[in-house]
Length: 322
Figure (cartoon, one colour):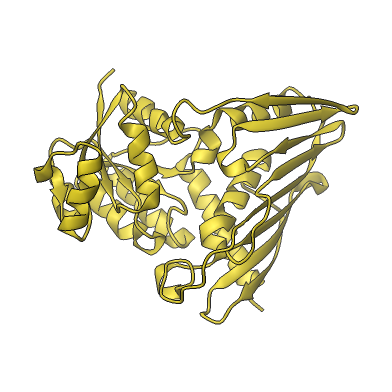
């Protein structure tokens, strides 16, 4: 299989985690990085042995680099659409951080660009690719807990209040729904599918105009429900509990988990599936596999998944702001 050469646009904390994984894998190589600041790009590239002439001070330069096969887009989400489309039009495959865009219309524009240019595109929802979550799905498919009736999932953390920072700044796409609510909604789609028949929500809008916390209730066919919570103003357990007619599964810190507990008839089975590196490697391997097979999208995190999950996000926002 061909070694896939990566570039990174946006060099914040999550890009560092991504780079740490890429540089420890055999089937990929980090060849270039880009920031709006040349100095920041050089400093980042130096940490991961990227040649100085491949540390770009503009996003436009990296998409012209002929040695780049795929670009990881890790800028704030209001900029995902334009940067992803720019990459795709320059025939660069794209792995774009979640949420893929800020609304359904935008993600449709991105996917249209991927289709027209015949280039691979995937939203970077790494949670779906983690070994423990694949195991959870196996347990469910095997009927270990019977028919699943309820999902309860939360993702909350207490961020320092900074009106100009990304999380509390409306212009930068701040708020709990886009930042962490996406994890719980995507996990519900992972368990129940993308088509709830009823959506209820409530968003608390803080002083800067962003939602600081959000509660969501998704109802599916046959009374199945997801009760979800996200917040940037309080720490929560970040746990997912999947409750079936015959038992339950608890996934600790589900968005980046390596541990799950299966409980049936009072008997607990706890499994631990440690990461090979840091958890980012599994979605990277999916991209590599898809590109090497000539696929334009992943079956595990498909274009339709991204569209329909963003449609749910849009409705949660519309219904939650009173």
